[in-house]
Length: 355
Image (tube, rainbow, N blue to C red; front, side):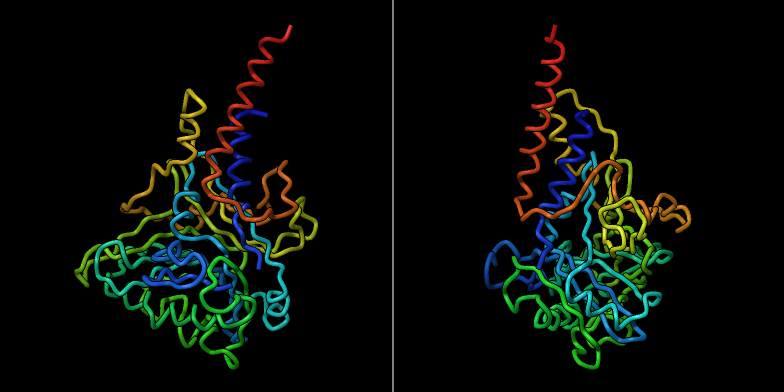
């Protein structure tokens, strides 16, 4: 097996070590309490939300991925891919209440700070295909109003008291919930929801959600300055050669995939082609986000942007992913890559020395 293939498998495995099994979603507040509170200070968690605005019901899953680690680990130059099958009991209770054709999905995370300083109030979010170009027109004032204690943090507060989220101040544990607007209005996500909508309660000039089967680029939005009317800073999740995207689809029943017949959430970033002459150099490339930073983006039509997105091909050929391991440290990724690289080098030396 080539070193490139080994590093791809290591990156895939390292992301899948992250816990997204069965509790409280962090909103990145300044003074969190509970287990690992210091880790979650200013560090929100990614949430996955699916809703049917006609049935007035939504499903929320704590992905167990924190903003700070995901920002780096999801923008690798060699390869990044994460699969999350949606199969829990809350999802099973949600499906009979909805019409699949009406489903809209969103992935987002927040640090909903009241600060007007640059880079403090921030949100990661998907965007509806066709509305991406509007993101850069959002003002600092719109971001702070939409990403606030009265909107997204109120939503998280309501959601965290439902389903298997685990109650308040228990961020390291992850859960899910299914909430009907008439029963839990604050925990419902969708049109006319009490706390949080996919336009940030009308403050965003774009829409965060997509249809089942549609993919979405992922964006980091934050204030650019104390000037309320200036436009925000926008960074797209990417590497040197490609853009990262989330996809949510129902895998075909006859697909050649361990997830056949299941609803599957995935994050994918294709490999770029940086060069390194040593194992240590390659490991550094694998662990470095060369493209992180804020820049102007050129948005392409959806038909061009997502031309390579294939809902029926969400699993890498030849890679079997049948179970999700227990959580492990993000920092183990570099050690794993070094070990794989060393093993590959030893195998090459042994091959050359063989009679």
